[in-house]
Amino acid sequence: MTRTAVIAGQGALAPAIIAQLDDPLVFSLEGYQPDMPTTPFRLERLVPFLDELIGQDVTRVVFAGAIRRPRLDPEAFDPRTAQLVPRILMAMQAGDDAALREVLKVFEENDLKICGIEEIAPDLIPAEGVLTGQPGKADQQDAERAAQILSATGSLDIGQGCVVAQGQCLAIETLPGTAAMLEFAGRHADLRPNPKGGRGVFYKAPKPGQDRRIDLPTIGPDTVDQAAAAGLAGIAWQAGSVILLQRDEALRRAQAAGLFLWARA
Image 1 (cartoon, rainbow, N blue to C red):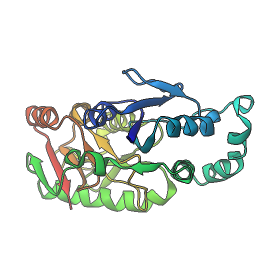
Image 2: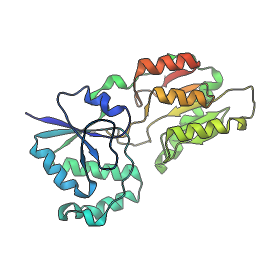
Image 3: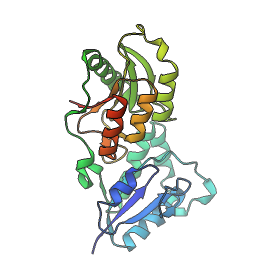
Image 4: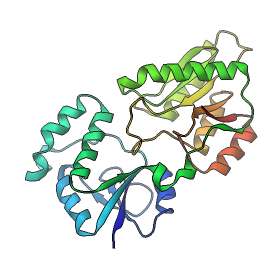
């Protein structure tokens, strides 16, 4: 019998993925305990952790939920994991995406398959179409502008979202995350050139060349609330490339707030 391990981060994605699997083993990075029972592990002891997975007949691993780069304790490394430090540190210099890819390589070198959310729960990733509301011409132009911005910044490993209003970029997602970006955009909504013009669009997309098995952009009901609080017209994202959690509730809140939700080609 082979088993699947879930590396659970914070947020609602991990529970949604666990519900799709048959008796998975659930782990979390120490210091990033999600709101569910998990077995913690330390990155400084990555190789013994991989041995543990293999010893429990794990052949597939799914990463689900938000995890920030941990602070590493040099004294906590076991000898075998310490041998990986130079290659991981070198990857970190190229950004979080490169560091994640290097960690995934270590898993694969130990015959563990990394499964993406698209493979486990494809219904969580909407295909092209307007889910609710109707983006107007100004909104469509703002979404196009936002897509261009993320395409240009993606190689810099900055973030997966931005807010554009009337062609002006009000905010770009960085390390503090989506909620902080939307709060900032709301505070500076007066920077829109025409107070009576388009209210603006929050746009999400993966970074160009991103490994889609891990860290796909995610939105959900809380994102809808935050976009509404920022005074935006709606949320758009790259179709087939963004996870939508609790779809029915997200749609209900968007309809109540008068926001559109649009999976854009």
